[in-house]
Image (cartoon, helix red, strand yellow):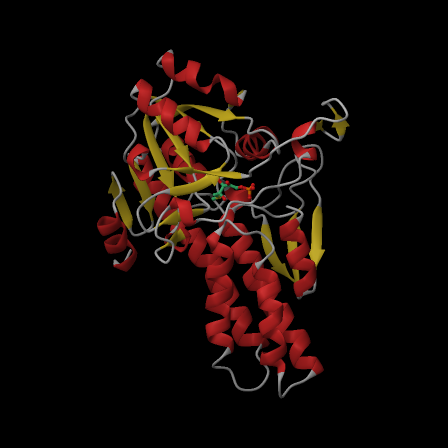
Length: 357
Ligand code: MRU
């Protein structure tokens, strides 16, 4: 089962698109059923897009933001049809509803605010202009990832092996990926020859999505139980941990998939470098520190079941935070399309956001 899209001639390993706009619909790869089935879900209302985000048909911070941008087009189309004079009023509460679909990834809010700012300026039917903006958000994200890949790969010593966590790949973005963009670029340039992927309990983004995505591109991958990471580091088998981010606070603290913090602690202990790859849209200068980032807590069933099969005894309870905070001092490099900062601090991060890429 392979993705049919022809490879971009200029950029190797860039074939997968999790989100597409097709015939007035949002077309999403259904990430709940990978790797067993490659199926698409077609969404044609703003409410349907919010549901797809909530249920994790589409997930990963930038992919959520892009889906939301297209959702604003659908919402504006429907509100304009209902009431061409006051569509903006009705859309406002739709946008609040959409924003609440998942709380941690700031790209959701970022994309909605960008679309809303444009909507405020439009006279007449808003669809064409909003669609253009959503497509711009989408193509900018892909271009950012190509640049992140290039910049991140340049930090890696030739002949290295790396470890990634969750899925920060094409499936989580407009295309190419952030952490997996770095992996793709580093494999292309011969810097990386071995990729380890944590399975990423409990939703298994690593084994279900990262392994699938890399194998689609012909990049070999070795899966590890999350709990094997420290031993892998102790044995000197990896040089870098490379992860994405759901939100980077103003002081450089990073929210990412649960387990990222433990990896950063183990990496520091073993002299392994720790890289966060993310677009500028993931940096939230309005959130002072990691302590201020809302962390989504998901249903306990995700922990107590495996592939729909109960694995915990009746009566057990589970705590299931979907993300954790890695403090800035454990991060060696943040790689964005605007450039790289080593050992992030509030001052350097703010400068990076203000810089032209
Ligand atoms: O719960 P998910 O699968 O949406 O979590 C995704 C992650 O934590 C990713 O690492 C992050 O969104 C960055 S994706 C480029």
